[in-house]
Structure formats: structure tokens, C-alpha cells
Image (tube, rainbow, N blue to C red; front, top):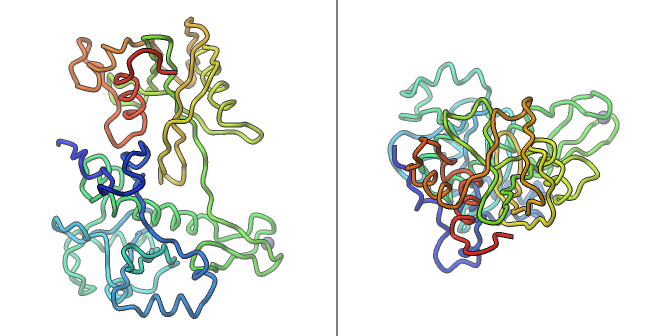
Length: 333
Ligand SMILES: [Zn+2]
């Protein structure tokens, strides 16, 4: 299926329109989070009572959508949502164009009864949707995909953090779903974001790309890895490239970031300057790593590489880092 790249463009005239991050899947999120209103149960009750209020539904770790091609098909009224039974958790995400948006976590077992034509709960037709597919194929507007990804990441955190990491006692959600407290030891637990560096290493007119064994056949991508404690972003980039490809790296420049709700990463896209070109592949991490010329990178993005090699799709930040490299004349970094 053709990827509708246009759906990920930010609205014209917004202050983020020129940011690369806002042009990548999950990178557009215009929610006004109202973090002060999360603190007040009275405010939350008012927001829930607003007839315009809508919620995203996450069944286990899978979004539930209404069938059809409507742009707002990820949104349910709160009455529609509660018809599926009591939610496991709820969160107030914020308002979008003054409409209060929530996230409801529904039990994973509910998926068994949702066959795609659920009429038992009086909801009309619904379908469980693969969030990666929604992003890859542009099946939701960017304005919906960002908050839906956030809803999935937040509900996934609730699902996995029912017990205190400090003392093992069950925890309870507070502040509109943005904190869990332990009633025994008083510890506060906050939703996690896990930083990952992903970097395009350039050596003049060439860039370094690698492939993991589980990638689609022929696909090469920018190298990536989790930031470790005690590391700057720059240090994490240099360490990962040295570990995986044996290439010493000098300067590192931030380019763009992407929330990646699988389950809760933040991809931090960088350009990096190679200080050598002798590749030593870490075979535990990579199946291959190679230098590619700008012309080859262009061919891979266009799907015309003579060896049939390809680049990641536009939903991935790696696609945009590689595209920026091919569009740069002279030094990338
Ligand atoms: Zn505790």
C-alpha cells in the first residue's frame, strides 16, 4: 500500500511547521496537557462531564477504532467507552481544540470478544488496530496519531506498574493518570520515557547504515541504541557507533526526535561525524554494516537501488535522517 506521507505534515502556519520532528509519525501532538487541572478531582470531574469529551480506547496494548474511514474514528464518547465495561485505568490527556481527550485502558481479555463486528456492547462496528500499521500507512491524521500513541504508551505504563518498585505494594493512580502512588511507603511513580539515540554517521559523501537480522530483506537503517545512565546524548552516539561498527565518531549534532510508543521510547535523531572508515561489525547486534554514497542513499529511498536494497519507510525517523543527508550539499556535519 502507498504511504500517505502528507498526513504527517503539521498544520500550515503553526510554529512547529518547519521542525523536522513534527513531520515524522507520532511527532505531531497539539494537546494542551493542562497539567495543573490534573491535580484537581473537581476539575477532572468537570472535564469528564463535558459533552464534547472523547476517549481513546486501549485494549491490553492495542488501540480500538471504529470501522470506516472517518478521521476521528479513534475517539469514543465516554458513554460508548463505559459500555465495554469498567476500565482498568483512565487518564486525562488534555484538550485538543478545547475538546477534552481521555485514554481508557480496557482489559486484554476483551480482545477475544471483539471480532471486528461487535454489536453486543451496542457500539456498532469496531476493530482492533495495529498502531505501527496505522502510522506506516497513514491511516489516521497526524493530529490523531500523536495523542493515540501517547495514550498507548501511558496505558502500557499503567498496565506494567501496578506494584511499587520500592516495596512491592499495589499502587494507585492519581493526577489524572500521570502518577501512581504507593499507599504503603508513599513513593510516587511517574510515567517513563526511555531515550534512544539514532544516528546517521557521515564520512564526507558517504553514510554508515546497518541491518539487524530481523529487518525486512535488503533494508538498511541508521544505527541506534538506548542511552545509558551517566551518558550525554553525544556520548551515547559515540559509544553505540564504536560498539556496533568500530567507527570512531567526533562531532554529534541533534536533528530531530520522535516519540515511539513501543512501549515508551523517545528516538533522538542525530548527525555524527566519522573519524575513520574501517568498519568492524558487532555480529551480535548487526548482520551487516556498510558505507553508502549519497547516490545510493537516494536510490534506496526511491526504491531503485541496483542491488534491491531499501531504506526505512517515512514513519521512521531514520528515513528522515537519511533524506536530510541526501538533500545536503557538501558536509552533512
Ligand atoms: Zn511502596
